[in-house]
Image (tube, rainbow, N blue to C red; front, side, top):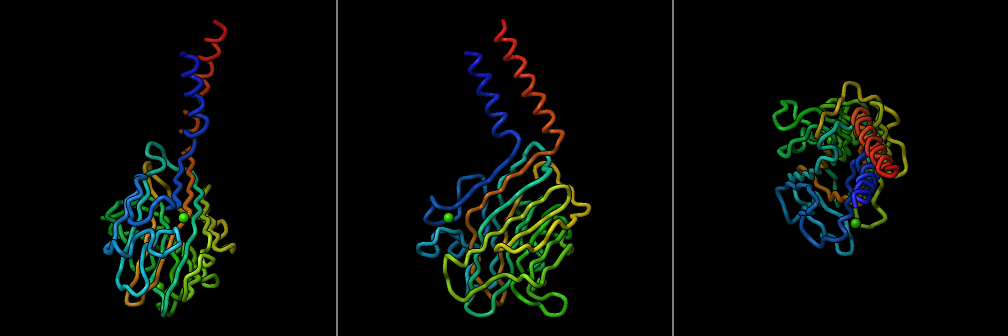
Length: 270
Ligand SMILES: [Ca+2]
Ligand SMILES: [Ca+2]
Ligand SMILES: [Ca+2]
């Protein structure tokens, strides 16, 4: 009996304790934004921010075209509540649509994000420079509205609201009509303080240094979308995020597993 229990513990240790993960495809929901998975959605418009908004489309809409000044945030539960994240890989599908001039932005954020956070400066991610609503964070922003000058439509990488990189060649794809084929896959990989971003099969950023960025225990991921005077639909689907805890945590877990293995062997030989 004891042997079975130890084997089970070893199995759990080997399969899931080394990485955190969040997977959501919204397929089991027909409406609303409560996914019963520890995530929190905050929006000023619950009819706009919902699954099931587009008949036949299983994605989650954060903002809706032709509704101005929306702000919707989708906070994921911490994937490393007791460790610091040392690397992560995130994948999701993103779709925009706008009848006229699209705006303003969609962002993917990772760091010390409080659930009071919202978009900051329309296209600078969720970072709050006063740090009242957030701590330090990385943000990837799909900026769909040209503010002119040095801020055209672009995909931007920010650390604490400050641009690390700005790709004005690979701009967000915002068609005027809906089609499932208009979804574009996004991959964001962060490891060794370098981040790479891929969008619709195109490399947006390749191994950009994230400088002084250092996650702390319990950091989280969050998505945000917002509209202004101009508007757009922003849909999200097929989220798959994996985190790896800091090496010291891995080491401790490894020792724990080895210890249990030794205990099990002792039991066998006894
Ligand atoms: Ca889906
Ligand atoms: Ca903009
Ligand atoms: Ca821009």
